[in-house]
Amino acid sequence: MHQGQRLWLLAGTGEGPLLAERMLQRGWRVRVSVVTAAAAAAYRSLQASSLGQALELAVGALAGPAAITAALEQARSHGDPFAALIDATHPFARLISHDLATVCANGGVPLLRLGRALQQPGNATVVPDLAGLQGCALAGRSVLLAVGARQLAAAVTCSPGARHHARVLPTPVALQQALVAGLDPARLAALRPSRDFSIEMALVRRWAIHAIVCRQSGGPIEAGWRLVSQRCGCQLVLLARPAEPHAVVPLSEAALLARLDTVLAKG
Image: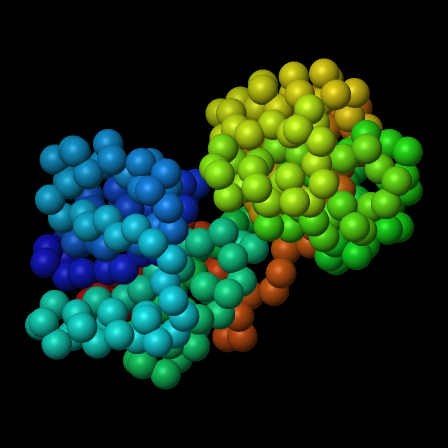
């Protein structure tokens, strides 16, 4: 048990809540940083539990390395430093992962990265980036884009002639980005991923989708799209996962918790 020692976890709504719970159960105090209030809602039940007194929720994007460094220095100056920083952000959140790696390399704070298992492509087509869509023969076909609202415009540009559909998060920003990308409102679904992907499967069938484009993110989202493509007989195109920052080695949850035991024991 590490009662009183403090960790900083940056995460989303996938693995984050369970990882935070495991840390709290082991006696650590945990600050969880998420980008949006909607993401914070995934931690509310944990915050309301008997472990909640040791959980701190911080909402909002971190403004680069300077903001991260300032937060670490503030914690030290208050006599309550972070013993380690845990990056459990999305595999495609390259900027924040790079910033965390830079700060921790220069600041002497241990950084641990939670990894997601990389599945074999199977029947999926893996392209290195959105430009790779140009070689997937998507023209004249109904294509469902599930690549994140910020990448919709580029995805549409890189798949000319396709009948584009999209699933985006139900936020004003995501909807605006989808419309700016040229998506027809009738071909747009604003919803959060369903637990069993039954809604996504219904959309694919309703829209007579021929190909699904999503990210090679691992975890339940990629698994859900794989299931939909198999059951509906669709082509699945995966955007290749970006490389991790230099010298950062992703760990499984079990390995990460074991490494934390070692890091904190030295402290």
